[in-house]
Image (tube, rainbow, N blue to C red):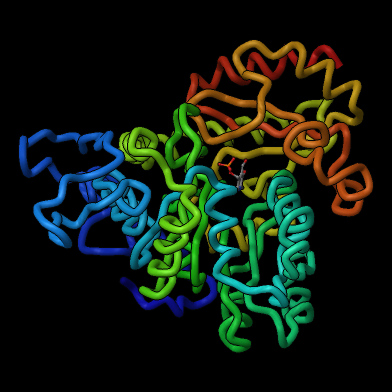
Length: 398
Ligand SMILES: Cc1ncc(COP(=O)(O)O)c(C=O)c1O
């Protein structure tokens, strides 16, 4: 792996982990042909247990909660794509985030972004505070605020970049330097960018988390989560969490992700191409009041985005002005599908205030700037003309 102390202004790309390029690793690492049959596709080992030769003698597999060959293959693949030493997969993105939290203890303090996916503060505030964890929410796009919020008891800084749904960017190289100087772990949710466009470990992250439900799987047909590790003790601890707590990813869903990642690079290129064009279209549309997309020159962290990411992706939020306007347009979409989630080949459009960020409550949303008129779009890889025509006709309802 390349030197992780990358200099500011240097953009880490998905090909930094040599000797093989990103797509080659996506298609072949962990995806080697089956040694027994020669099957080019990783088999789905649908088994709950494994036969043992004698007491204490087996082929490395005892019980499927502890380990499964299909899961091992996926964990190897995703570790390679993110440039980590190992990875552990869980039943959902939230299960992966919860597993990370079990690595810490009551009394530990976490500094985290104030504009995370809504399910994360729900886990933190409504479950983990009851176990003695403490959380401070700051705008992580200002690294000084992260530094100021760190206390003696801080063990983790948890960052999403770009954020959901406001698309603010946090400077991972600077935050990682702060975390290192204070002996605090930096955990980055890389769901929106995928390892194809953003390499947090190269920028200094200690662990990377994904909802594999999104771009990694890419076909909106399975839930999943992964934690990519940079140290053997992290993967050992998380392996123990898999065994002890049991929220593992099923062999079938591991296989779906293995199949999905084979096309990650080409999908991300097309997502990015369509995303840029849709953002441009929306930014010029008279019914749209504001567009939040890091690829636009007027985005406050556009310059940082250009150095930290190798593409801008396809997540866009825009302001329609009111809940009534948002509803009028969302009722009219035909090619885009109104629904939660993101990162699939199909374009999904959603309303953060009543969907992904409903759990924050009105006050919580207002505090960070999520309005009732905001609409979030995960631009898919359909024909661009069809997407633009659909959004245009839907916006004409406002
Ligand atoms: C950025 C981000 N992180 C984590 C999650 C949680 O993942 P899952 O729904 O797979 O539990 C989501 C879900 O939308 C997300 O958008």
